[in-house]
Image 1 (spheres, rainbow, N blue to C red):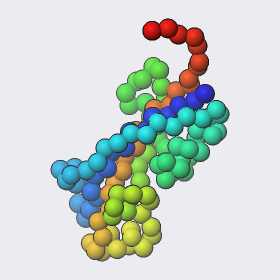
Image 2 (image 1 turned 60 degrees about the vertical axis):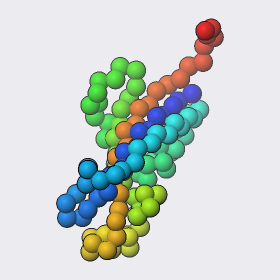
Image 3 (image 1 turned 30 degrees about the horizontal axis):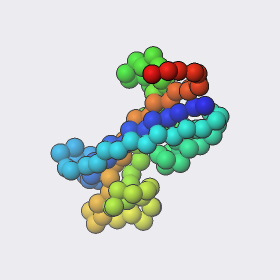
Image 4 (image 1 turned 45 degrees about the horizontal axis):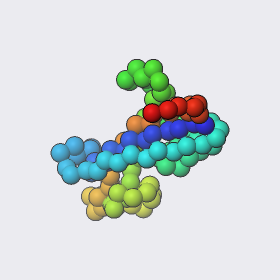
Length: 117
């Protein structure tokens, strides 16, 4: 079995100024599991509104127990889902507020072994 833990960090994004780090944002995490690597990859791409080529696999933190990926997307005004093309155009004109959602993804292979506590 394969597991991905995705840490989401959302900040308001201003087209002119970029991410507004000091604005009230949101943080959450999601754990995904799958029987195959392909299935997990698809679940990650769906959860992060990404394409496989969008994921950066640079190992920033030198995890020896997980493979680390990073990606980001623009969420709509309610910080839900992927912003539409019309929402992005409105955002560029300063009429709509969007959120930059940064995703830190840790992928591991989970083995089931007998254990006691």
